[in-house]
Image 1 (cartoon, rainbow, N blue to C red):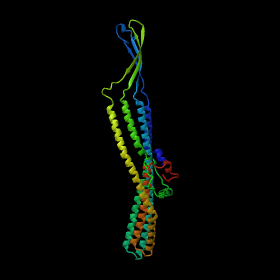
Image 2 (cartoon, rainbow, N blue to C red; image 1 turned 45 degrees about the vertical axis):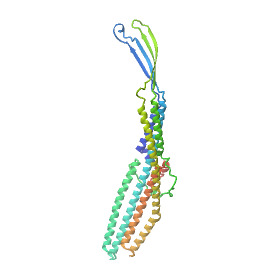
Image 3 (spheres, rainbow, N blue to C red; image 1 turned 60 degrees about the horizontal axis):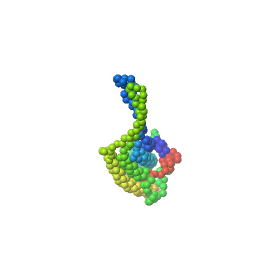
Image 4 (spheres, rainbow, N blue to C red; image 1 turned 60 degrees about the vertical axis):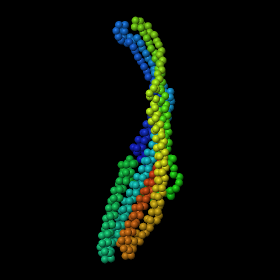
Length: 397
């Protein structure tokens, strides 16, 4: 998990988005720059102006003043953007943790499926040998040997398919971990995979810790800040300027100095920012309505995820406690009884099929438990990421 958090491009992009929003916040709080103005008049001409000496030289500064509180409103809006970017970063991090946990469970389940199919193939070969002996002894029809050979071929095909699926699952995990290859330590991975924990609690699920849920309120606050900024932009900015001018008569060397002050205010006859205010108001209403709907959907998704996790846990628990042990005992009795002539070949095949169906179902159920738990943790805000890091190679992701 640490490797995925360090190398994930999507997580890195979300971190850069936070830095970008902080840069926008810094820029939003800056004042407008003053302007320097320099001018010369009558610096060339004919007659008394042919000397090339300017008759009037001015130097001044102008400063635009934001008197409507626009700078504070811009800073408030940028601060909301920083908060939203932080929520997005937390969501991407939780998405990555969920995806890695689910991919890890799929990879382990796929590797265990290969072991199950190899064991199925081995037992099918044992049944074929026993059947061949009975056929040679005249105690079984040759058709039963053909059935045993078909069962062995089917098991071999299933094993090859499981090996291909295991390769695909391992490659998908490697992509999430940004690694070239992933090796799953058998015992440590199996211990984690087989551990489904205590029965899930029926209550206590809340979406408030989910960054997507918290982001809804932040999005509404951001829309309010945008509306406030547009309203403040309706207040015109005032530009103050001051200049120093020197005047000289063309026929003399004497100069006079004058100080000039100026003030300019836009006349809001047509543009009072009414269009942007209307747009921001509509965006606020839209965001509030969308947040209400999204909040209900998140709460419903969390409740559904809790029920799916509970159902997966109950299925896995029943399979490992009752179904699989019973199927193992039944197959053992059928195989021994077949060798002693107490059971028919079809009964052995049926017991074998039941056994490996139970093993495959348990393997799928355990994978479902881990996948549903990862989804539930994502929707409820997730466990501490440090708690999901492996303590040894091939351990819990």
